[in-house]
Length: 167
Image (cartoon, rainbow, N blue to C red; front, side, top):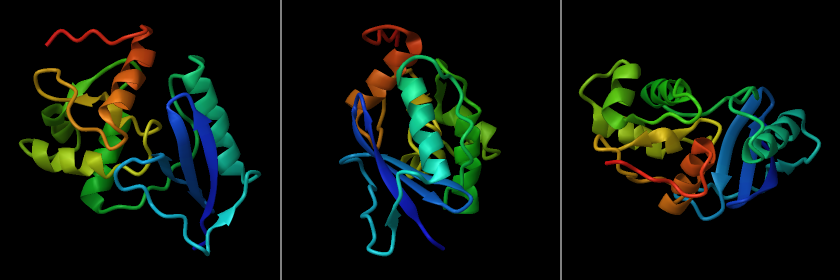
């Protein structure tokens, strides 16, 4: 399966965008945990339709004009991981839920730790909004892209310059 890639300059650093023929399979912040290496057989293609759409939608999101993403997604993962990523996608703009609530939405009540591990492996950051998943007390727990980015994304969605948490 051919992979295509390009980069997007976000307000929070460069992002690697990866697509297959049928959709977006990766969105990664530079330096984040699980950042894949661009393989020699991947083709850089700034004109690839999916990558162009992803860049446009990310620019609209970071500009405050987009709350939902429409680009087709094809993340690769286990059945469990994909069920968790689908549940993450149900969390609305400006909302947060706990890992326990996420596990429930994914159909695996009581598996907050496993849901958290699957969240950490989310290959489509920002678009599959894992930054909206927080600790049961509202604390900002791990984020593969770094807690500063998580805080900034939540602040963007809250419409405030800095995030004020009431824990």
